[in-house]
Length: 113
Image 1: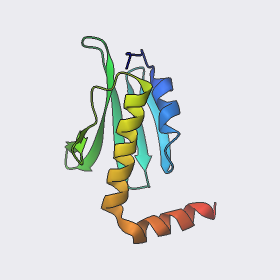
Image 2 (image 1 turned 180 degrees about the horizontal axis):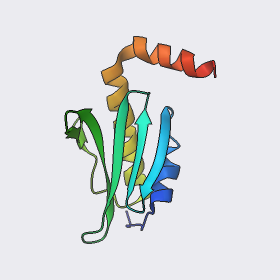
Image 3 (image 1 turned 60 degrees about the vertical axis):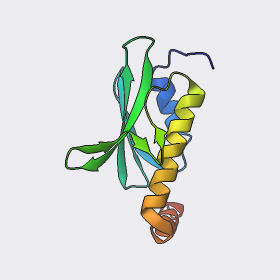
Image 4 (image 1 turned 90 degrees about the vertical axis):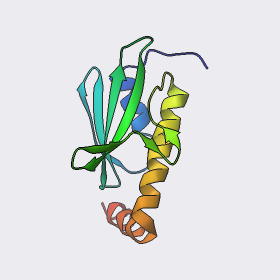
């Protein structure tokens, strides 16, 4: 798949496709941030070494981050499809970590808004 020069705004448009994203912000031309399911903070960074790619990290607290989840690397994403795949992996990871009871409560709370 061909490489694309994705801007922070392009990536935020893809983030907005996720079902439970809040607080999505463009921090700079090379950094974004968002929260999934009111539980996990995620950062996205543009790496301008070489061809330029986006990568993501889930902040776990205490300075720890996960840039690979469930065997899927969240970095070196050079086109829309690769970014979508990373975002879908983040969503799967969050859903599994949070469990059915939390997800039901989250959905009910957001449905009332």
